[in-house]
Length: 154
Image (tube, rainbow, N blue to C red):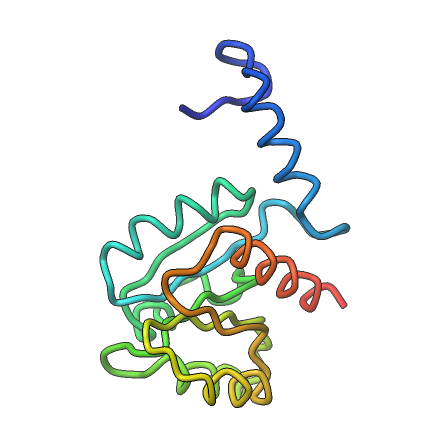
């Protein structure tokens, strides 16, 4: 159920606490409707992750490939990129490198199902905000999003 400020039944105590907790956990000064673009070839991720990102107070757009993202009108609007490492065609890491070389500094959170502890430090050294291993927690995602959007505003 989606409640807006002036419609629907009053929120229960637990709903109010959850909304308050989510508002309080957002980074100070971060625009709450910043666009987060999600690129993952896994359909279940493209269906579920945007919903979670929206619940956390951000706008979200999902893409099945790096090429689809690059061809979209959302590249310039994207304030944070959640990017799967393994994609058909252009890999997540290659897309990040291309965007960097084009001076499109979009804070990037990599996500991957392949737990390689040596990979994370390399990605951070290349400018990534974070690398989350699937499955990741809502709080880990929110922390990474807040870090990404703080980076974008500084």
